[in-house]
Amino acid sequence: MEKVIPFEVTYSHTQNYDTRLLFAYGSVWTVVHPNLVRIDPKSYDQTNIELPGVLGPVRPLAFGDGGIWIADTGSNTIFKVDTAEDSVVLKFKASMLSVQSPIAVGAGSVWTVASERAERVVTRFDAMNGEVQAQIALPGGSSGIAFEGDSAWVAGRNEVYRIDPASNAVVSSTPVCDRPSTIAAGEGSIWVHCRNDGMVDRIDSWTGSVTGSLDVGVRGPGMVDLTAGGGSLWLATLVVPLIEIDPMTVELRRTYEGEFRTEANVAYGDNSLWLLRIRPSGEILRVSAPDRY
Image (cartoon, rainbow, N blue to C red):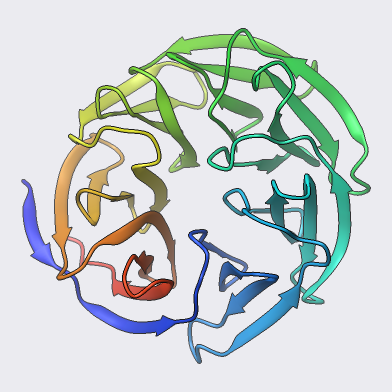
């Protein structure tokens, strides 16, 4: 049953943070130009890691292969930051167009939707050296990519394409809600939010079938961010600050209200949600995750 409850903010800090948050390798990661910023969730100490030549804006951050990956659309460059060394250990050129579209890491590769032919090409890069391994044509335009199980998943206009890393080919297409604008992996599933009808669809990563749908009532491009953690799917939106969904039943659990608006950006880690407040600009918030029922 849906419950509307207030935020319980346990930490906040303002520093002109970019609207990109990620929790990985035990830390919160974000961008303060020209640095990648690592935040310790226990002490809140910050480490600034310079990204040489970054121009911004950056795409949503990704992690995997021992690193944090930053895709800079301004310089058409992808950076890898080694989490053990807190330094850039790899950078390579990548043709990119949309700042909204994320990159993905999996099967020893970095996957990105390239700007060729109106974002109808996925480029696969070797995560060790940045060399192009494959360019994979898509049936239509794309708005994002995620990696789950043994496949890369690409959000199309009204469908999600599944790419097999062994063959570097699209092996299936799954019809979904109207115009996916956000795609994410978590809880063994692929999740998409569609900007035209406000639906969230869950795709089983084994069968490739839609196994649940929910109308969250939020429409428009760039309005929603998705993340999974703590046994829930979380949506940060420009309309409702935070929405919690049961990933098993795809039913609404709770919505969260605050005395302020947040960006459509959310990360989960250390039993907390991490959000960005719109005003004052760049304020990062830590919100306690709810107790389970």
